[in-house]
Amino acid sequence: MGFFIGPTNVADQTAALGIYAPLNKFVTTNQDVTNSSTLTDSTDLQVSLAANATYDFHTLELIGSSSPTSAGAKTKIVYTGTATWYGIRRRDSSTNAEPINVSPTWGGSAEVVDGQINDQKSVIGERYGRIVTTTAGTLKIQFAQNTAVSGHYARLLVGSFIRIQRVA
Image 1 (tube, rainbow, N blue to C red):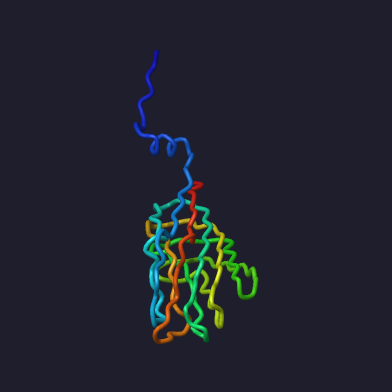
Image 2 (cartoon, one colour):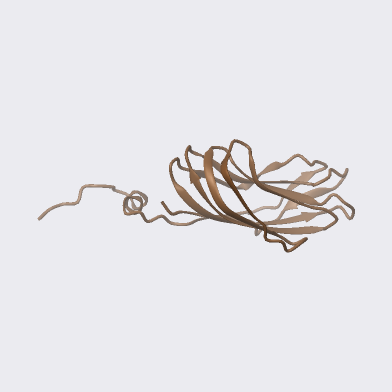
């Protein structure tokens, strides 16, 4: 009788078989950006990705704004490593648009999509895509007021999420 000598934990065993579990990260506490149009990292919506891997992802950004005027909000998805990405689809509540943005490379602090919505008190942004990494890095959501308005905020709301699954 032979014995299997190989990975000893579930994660290594499933990776050895090419099976990867999805990872879901949710905003657990509202996060504010006050009087600033400088994009800020979400504390909850960040995921470390391995080098030389392929991932499918889905994000939902629920953004509220306290400004009754034109502060609006903007969101951005960034990857801190180097990668190629495909089929980014973004939908926002202001236009209900579904543009598909494709670029051959994506790395550093370069954005995939920067959705800017003015004159709205809330924004629902959604992205779907695939990323093929060359180097390890962090995939993260950023947000801010579209135009800084004193005494007001853009708020990333509980319920926002990033769902990612390694597929190769």
